[in-house]
Length: 194
Image (cartoon, rainbow, N blue to C red; front, side, top):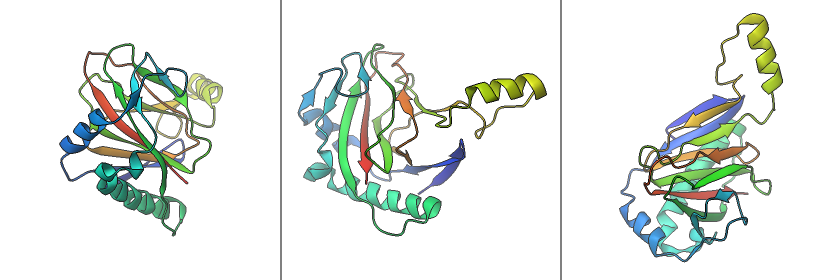
């Protein structure tokens, strides 16, 4: 675990993969895809793999690395000592300005995350929203006191994805992917734990 930050009084973890992601990107592109919209948070007919990547040999090293990082994050932030395993893992490819993911949570999981295989500039930032729904409170405080918004009092934070980077967060935190601003290929692997 390279870094743990706090936003909305919620810890999220950040790690950098030390190996090349080229073979993983090629493996994703060779995996069976679906473009059925409405089955998940995808908008704009982007494509997604089945949610079984964690069972495929091509992704075994990545799965083991993610599970190690999740265990460090869960122990450091929540005092969870036992190993936590990936329950499902899938890839998503967004390539046009109409591709994005609407705000959603993962209610059947404990922790969730995203690993970026390809994240060109303008391909869509990752946005975490404040789960406490404090919009009215923030607006009122800003008007009354001139309060400066920070990571604990903001309504959302934006994370610029980086190739080979991992982001971990509790599954109850609402999150989305902003629309692809360019015609570039953004490839990510998402997963759930517990």
